[in-house]
Structure formats: structure tokens, C-alpha cells
Amino acid sequence: MERSYKGKLLLFGEYTVLNGAAALAIPLDKFSGKWSFSKTVDNQNLHKFAHFLKQFNKRQATQFDIVQFISDLNNGLFFESNIPMGYGVGSSGAVCAAVFDRYCISKKIIDDDLDKLKSIFAEMESFFHGISSGIDPLVSYLDKAIYYQKNHFIKAINVDSNDNFFLIDTKIERKTAPLVKIYLEKMNQDNFQIINQKLADLNGNSINAYLENNKSQLENYIHLISSIQFHHFKEMIPFAFQKQWEESLTDPKLSLKLCGAGGGGFIIGLRF
Image (cartoon, rainbow, N blue to C red; front, side, top):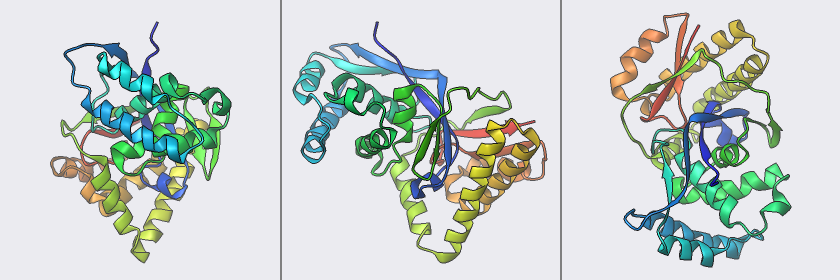
């Protein structure tokens, strides 16, 4: 039976994870994809990805069976998925995990090296985003929650989903790369670096509160994250949802936060 590859939800660490800050991502059971074959489906983007991986093979010790990949694509291989694209829930990460799992020749050698896996996945996913932390594909490939903190990984196997979290569908697709570019440009400003460090600290504290099931602390930290994102990441919040977001800042029992790069897709809500 063909394995499925889940999407992911980055609960904490939007953007700051690109600078090595803590992040927590969990698999999403609701969204997944798997390999399938059809002669009528357009798989040209996967063909482009295969050619991208040809260059990857020249740069990395890790090797992909590109000949087999292209042969399968010519026979109608495609990634059948219900993971919405441009929504911040790991559609490209699932594709990278699936390609690695099926076509990486040396994967057994590095399966236990999470640092190496993250590095490989980050470069693979750069095809889709221009820059990637590598966490999305890692979560999908391992099908486990991943806690990342300053280049150290903990496979948070026993992390359960939290019913207090919910997703708001903005019905807006977005591209990750332009939003990441905005963030990186902001990082050139000294005052923003201070704000970003505050956000990174709050993400770390939120993760600890989440893992310890400390709901009162979690509520407080996420409310502060929501406020920082509203005031300093407003470009990443769809205009149609900015009023609702601002109103949530005065509601002690409701907080909204970015899902992935923001800009559309889903918004993460937390209600106690």
C-alpha cells in the first residue's frame, strides 16, 4: 500500500525559526497526499523538480534516482493530495518528503541524523519557496511532531493535538517566497531585530507551556505573540482579517496568530 504524507501545522516559530529560534510543528491528520498514476494529470512541476534535483545530486553526497523519477513521471506519476497549496500547512513539504522517501538512494544512512535530514529537506524545499527551514518536510517524512531549538531536535512523540486550537480559512492562496523576503528585509532594521528576539523568546516560552499543558501561561504568551504579529507583521495578515485580529487583542479568551508565512491560507486561532 502506498504511504501517505501528512501536512503539518507549525504551532510556534513562524519566521523566527529561520534564525535558529525554537519551533514546534505537528502533523495534520486532516491533510495528506500520496503517489498515484494518471495519464491525464499535469505533472510538469514535478518534472521541473526532478531537474532541480539533478543539480542537487552534484552538490550533495545524498543521491536521488533521477532516472527512475523521470521515468515514473513520464508514465503519469503525480502527487495526489488534499493539502491546500499556499495555505501554510505543508503542501510542498509533503511533496519533498514523498520524493525523498521514494527516490533517495542513501536515505537509510541518514534516517537517524535529523540535522542532516533537515539540511537536505531545506535545500529540496528551496525549489518551491526560495528559502526553507526544512521542518515541514521533516515532520511529514517522520510523521511525528518536531521540537526544534537552536540546532537541536527532539522528536516529541507524545505531543497530542490541542482542541483549543482551530484554523480559520481566509480563502486566499499566497506564495511563501515574497513574504519571507519582506521578513528578511525587516531583519536589516535594528529595531525590528529587537522585536524579532522578543517574538523568538515568546515562541520558546509558548512551546514549553504547551508541552507542560500549562494553559494559563500558554494563553498569556500567545496573546503577546498575537499582539506583536499584528503591530509588526501586518503585511502578513490579510486585510480582510485585520479588524477581527485587532478585536481579538482585547478578548482575553481568544488569540489569533500566523500560520506559516501568513499572507493568506489559514490563520491559527486559540480559544480557551
